Image (cartoon, rainbow, N blue to C red; front, side, top):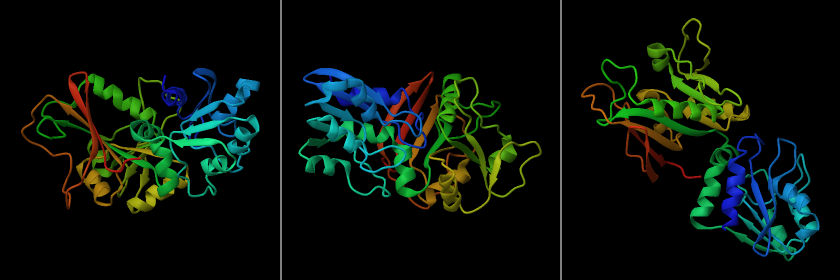
Amino acid sequence: MDFLERALELAAESLGVAHPNPTVGAVLVSGDEIVAEGVTEEYGGRHAEVVALEAAGERTRGATVYVTLEPCNHTSKTPPCTDALLAAGVARVVAGQSDPNPAVTGGGLDKLRGAGIEVELAEGEIAFRCRQQLEEWRTWVTKGRPFVTYKVAVTLDGRVTLAESRWVTGEASRRLVHVLRAASDAVAVGMGTVRWENPRLDARGVPVARQPSRLAFGRGPLPEGSELELRSGPLREELESLAVDGVQSLLLEGGPTLAAAFLEQDLVDKLLVFVAPKLSGEGLGMLAGLPGPVALTRLEACSIGDDVLLQAYIHEP
């Protein structure tokens, strides 16, 4: 068994629980046996490593800890995890990624290594998946803005509208969009979309722990009765302001003009393009003007009902 894979599974089952802290998974192993597991508790609670160590009791001596994020080496709501690992007598720590937080001084792995514990930092695909799981938090702490995902639905000829139909994509794709909204801190469109559709932007028909903030970028006024929050300042400044308010993830559902503005200012991190098996023949494309090409990485495709979802990164985590 790949024990980091198991740690990722544990964290995935509790994503968002520790917000605004990252949700981390930890697995404590003796020989080839999993002795204990842990996940970061709600904000202010124990970190994943401490949960696993306390569950293992005396079996921590000489064990290996697999953890999806480098153990912390600072005091905040809880004492440093490095101190707990040293006191528990573990022999080895394998971390899925280093801690990118510039506010944290002194690497946890360096401290453990200096104390004689064997340490290893994951590489390759498993390391990317650990970073990917925390991509929103990583962007928030390193760039001081939310991680921005641009979502768009298009026909096979790249149009965002379809004559005589409100919807471009099928029901399965539309349901997934509501899942994405439920997992985001904020959802946004531009004022052009507001005037054309007056969207609600809430998550409907799916489990929702808390509804996202619903935003409109651009010049008002908002239509009467709209529940959206208007954001009229420069895009980068508005994103920085959202970050101060704890918004780590923004799902951008805006039209071609707003999408191009975000891309031009290098404020989009990931693309989600839902492609329907239809031809429109006319109408707006997914971007209204772009000054130059944008390189994408890690392009993936999967079927969503009758549609195809393309995912790619502009900024990998």
